[in-house]
Length: 124
Image (cartoon, rainbow, N blue to C red):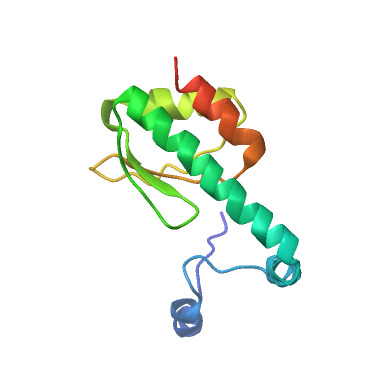
């Protein structure tokens, strides 16, 4: 059986790489998108509209959330975590489960094709 390991000499390099490093294709895409002011305005509008829908869904469900100026919302899902994740997945919406013991969810509601589907599913 072959064993793979990170060579000792590469440890300083690994420490210099950001946890969420971005590939070159993503960097080029972001630069192009930022040059398109109509795209940026539309994206910001979608984020704002999506967060409004998400806040309303959280209110209906009695979930604790923190309003955000970013493109995500932190939501405490508690014992409803699995139901929230499975309902979203069934509707084709991917949520990052970044929970620890606190069972907090960082939701990215900015994908307009997903936001209405997920907010509608949250009524169930």
